Amino acid sequence: MSIDYKAEIERLKKELDVTLVAHYYQRDEVFEMADITGDSLELARRCKADDNPWVVFCGVGFMGQSVKVIAPEKRVLMPKIACCAMARMIDGSYFDDSVNYMVEHGIAKEDILPITYINSDATVKAKVGEMGGYVCTSSNAFKIIEKGLETGKKILFVPDRCLGQNFAIKMGLKSCVIGEGECNPKEADVICFNGFCSVHQLFTVDDIEFYRNKYPGIKIAVHPECDPKVVQAADFAGSTSQLIKYVNELDPEQKVAIGTEYNLVNRMRQKNTYVLSSTKPECPTMNETTLEDLYKTLKSIEEGNPINEIQVDEHTVKYANLALERMLAIK
Ligand code: 13P
Ligand code: SF4
Image (tube, protein in one colour):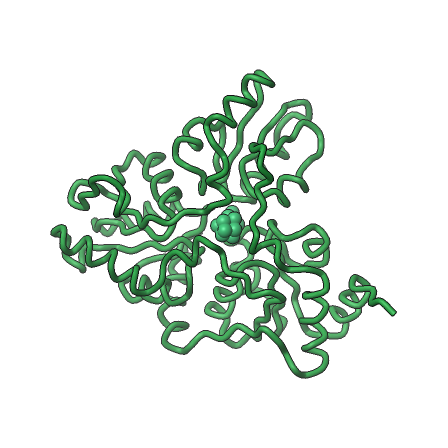
């Protein structure tokens, strides 16, 4: 007999002290089961404030890890420990190499303020925390970089070169990318690591021109993980929640093409809304989690044998938490 996953998940949610969390990029059927949904900043804040001892997190690895770091007393399980491809581009040793690059180019280590996008492993966040730095997300990067600049130090921004460059442009700062052309840390304010999101690289200026030619007056809204040229050509750039707000506030007759993950765009208002790419922009890792995985994870709690539990060592929790809490303290 086949299992009615939705009914079973509802039953298990009622019986267990568990909060089900899902990022906006999750498949619809998984997303619909969640108690808490949001962008990465909202999810981190709301999980911290939540009382349940168990969290089942449908998203990518760094998101579940961040909950464990902020609230180590919680038991955090992930139906799929799927790793964000961008987060995989940097580890502790690449982070050290980036710091060394700046030192070799005449910036003393104590004059470097690292900021890591939340899309990074906890070990990278810990290194950032140890150096007095911050975590940021796509919704608060402006405020965090502004805060970082108050120290008078050079900003080392990891791992997303696009986010780093986009906010530098927005703030009128000079940026460069390590390994890309001449990157002289003495001449730049924000020095970026060379990471990127392959999903958001799908959107191009040609796509924008295509839509503007096809539908004159159309608005273009993109995530700041897109290439700076794309962000410059768009009408609006924002985190997933900010994109939803932007679209909801448009006149229903206003056409809009959106440059971010497919599941989110597909869930937005149906009329006059377009995906800004001819290639379906699906995040493979966000799409890994299925209803069956979610059911099995909840069932494992009921059976007293939890699967896919997130573990972070004490040292990493201590220092990664510093970087995350510095971010959460900024309203
Ligand atoms: P948000 O911070 O907008 O949730 O983005 C996370 C992400 O992974 C985007 O690709
Ligand atoms: Fe990572 Fe890109 Fe997927 Fe976001 S869309 S989780 S940055 S790979």
